[in-house]
Length: 227
Image 1 (spheres, one colour):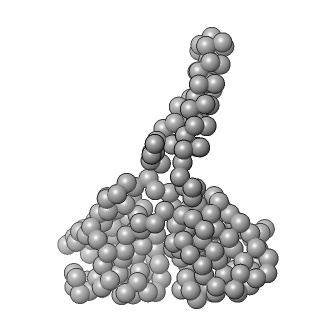
Image 2: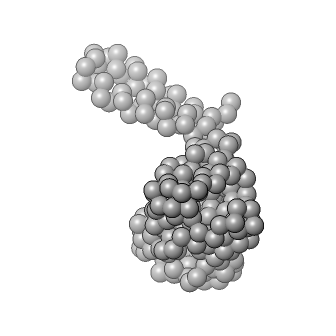
């Protein structure tokens, strides 16, 4: 049996709501409901495919040497686990690594694989202070729309596939706002998936600063398919 991440969130919500219901139903009936939902949740977790939650290992030194830390959840502050990061193993899931705490600074999107030094993930330095696991709540469709002006003004371009050169495809070098209608995406400052990286998930971005950029310069973008 296969489940989507939406199924998990829905089931978790049902389970959590049981505690609220305890004040308005008989204790015995609520306890039976609580047990039922717990069994349902346990069955769901056991049925999840391996790697659903993601797993990443950080190493202070190059070539997977030195102090290490294994992580399987979002973490806004990694400073207590290591002081710097020079190599990474992504065992499962797709991750966004951030240069600074609280998901700020340079962004790096890593798919499963081994990265023996920080240049392998196009890192600008060896500072990794927070991370997020990209969860597959997007289904199997991708659609993104960019605008030439802030607040979704001016000419718009829409795409449903990877684009190695925005200028060649659309004759734009800058985008000032964006709407992600489906899927998760990586936007790059330069063509051919180089330069600063920006993680874009479903939602509206009235300004380029909303996706973490300091300028509207764009060069390429691609879909995130590995979770």
